[in-house]
Image 1 (tube, helix red, strand yellow):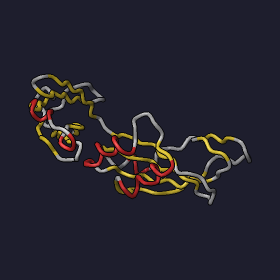
Image 2 (cartoon, helix red, strand yellow):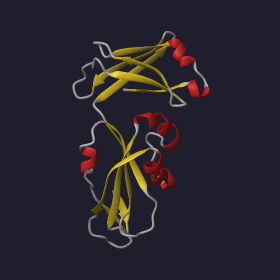
Image 3 (cartoon, helix red, strand yellow):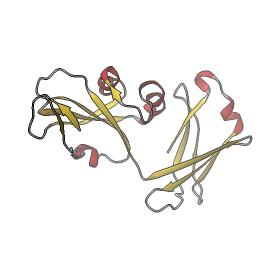
Image 4 (spheres, one colour):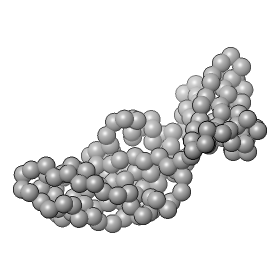
Length: 179
């Protein structure tokens, strides 16, 4: 974390609810882009539930100089289980500055998807071992957040969604596959 003239940070960990993931990725955040200002502040109120909050003291402050420090992931994030989390940081010492946020994905699931004339096929593997995972429920979500279809992975970690499910438009267009 790099700060200027801030000695304490107020931190929050927000878990983005599963059904909000597709909308969050479309409306609030682009992978690889920072989440700042209103978009960062809005996460706790619009996208999920705060599961942890706390404060952290930064390295000794040197006025008007960049101070760099390493902040360990909060206990609340380490113990929360798989999901999409957003770590929000704002000045904790009364300094006026915008909040910043860091999305963190906690998972051992690696999903590969192929789309063709027949439909959509997806394979699920454990990131730790590379082995296929059987019996995991996958959902095909639409732009409007409806569940278009659900299926469980087979012994090879594969699930298939029929082609007609991929032809929807507007709010019924397919948007994401969640495991």
